[in-house]
Image (cartoon, rainbow, N blue to C red; front, side, top):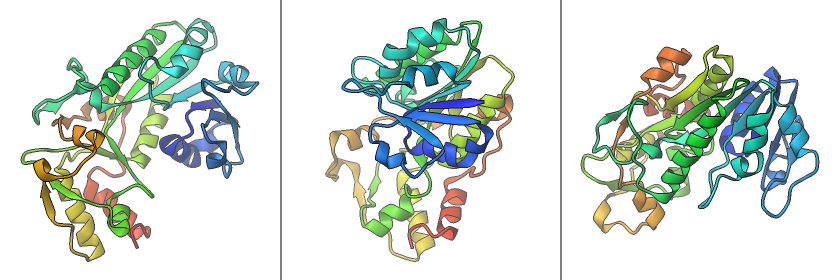
Amino acid sequence: MKLFAFGLGYCARFFISRSGGSFEAIAGTARVPAKVGEMASVETFSFGAEREDSGLEERVAAADVVLVSVPPGTSADPVLARFGHRLATSHRPQTIIYLSSVGVYGDRRGDWVDETMTPTPASERSLARLQAERSWAAIGSERDKKVYILRLAGIYGPGRNALCSLKAGTARRIVKRGHVTNRIHVEDISRAIDASIAHKGQGGIFNVSDDAPAPPQDVIMYAAMLMGIDPPPEQELQAADLTPMARSFYAENKRISNRKLKDELGLRLAFPTYRVGLEALWEAGEGR
């Protein structure tokens, strides 16, 4: 198989480092190619409004698996705008995996949410995500295409976790009573991508979240306990000095169900709770 990854960011790089041996050739795009320079096995292309490297179109057309983690812009999804028609009309069998967000569900007042529920995005970025999902799903209706839309919860993993933020002194314990958030370890995102590639079905939408929605301040508390340090003091949300983007994450409250991911893709999570994930990261040296 040949893999093409639109957006060689955190998730795509982790997936390639974990599962790259399954592919005979790997290529992808990066806004800053130097960031992936250490991945010698990956052919890297620039892709954007200002520049596009030659050979990009040929690599996309030759891919068996197309992984898309580039977020949509304010007006359109850049990958769809440039390659959507070509992918839809190509007769090459391809599996397309689009990394979306559970933000498309909007606020559910703490209730459980699964894939049968109609998305009600409230923010512009979540609405753009939903519009992109629908366009990718339409490509999946073509005979030679299978499209998997993976709605990701909040991502954590090596180098990006509460242990690191506590060590750096940037962690905050902001409290909004009754508020929970959802998260997923990057290792389990990679497992979900692998499961999608191996799946014999016709694609679909899958929530990718762990088993334990929890208040964000509890995650900080547990990380501090592992490190043997005092957690930062509690701050009530109303009094906290937050950017509009950071504050927007407290506007939505929901618990994400991963039952379909387990039942249809047969996925077994490596890190079913944030506690298990943080313990493994601590043992691996994170936050020390």
